Image (tube, rainbow, N blue to C red):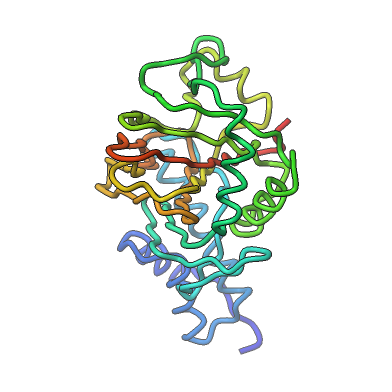
Length: 283
C-alpha cells in the first residue's frame, strides 16, 4: 500500500481500544501487524490520543495533559537499554503510568552514592506551599541532601542514563536527592507535582515548570518495611538495591493516580536517590 489514509473509522477504532484499556504500544503493534506503515500508524495513534485526551479533559473540567517522559516499551520488552546499561522491566502499568525497573544501578554505584551523600545529610524538608520555599514537616521524617546536576561523575552518569531511558532532556531534570530513612521513618502520602491552587506554586514553576515524572532508586535492600506505596491503585514497590520505580503525571491533578508514600521502615535503614523531571530546563 503506497498511501494510507487516517480515516474517521481508524480514529474511532483507536479511541475504542483506549477506552477498553489497551496499551498504546499494543495498539501500535496491532496496526503494524495489520499492514499499516509504522510512521503512519504512529502518527495516527499520537494525534488521535492527543485529541481524545484534550476533549476528555475539557468535558470533565480537568487541566489539559502535557507531554511526559516515558520509556520505549513498544513490543513489551523485558529488558531495555538505558545508555550504558541493560535494565529489566519488572512491572508496567498504564494508569498510573508506573514502571518498576530492575538493575538500574549497580551495587558499586549504590555504595558510592551513599558514601558521597552521607556527610551532607540533614533533616528532610517539604515544600512550603504559601511561599514556594521549604520547611521541616512531620509528614516527612527522613534525612536528605541534594546534589547539583552533574556534580560529580557518578551523578552525571546516572542522570544521562535516566534521560536516555525515559526519553527526556537531561537539562529538564533536577539534581539527585539522596534520602536516608531510619527505623520508623516515613513519608506520608503525597503528590510530587506542585499544587496549582497554592500561592507559592508560581514561584516554584519559574525554575522549569511543573514536575512531570519521578524516579525513585533504591540504594539498599530494606529487611522490612520502607516500600513505595500507591494507595489509589493498591500497589507497593519493595525497596531492593539497584532497582527503581518510575512514574509520570501528565497534569497536576489527582486523576493521574500518582498519590504515593514511603511506608515506615520496620527494620534496618532505607536509602534512596530520587530524580524529578520538569517540563522545561531546570535552572
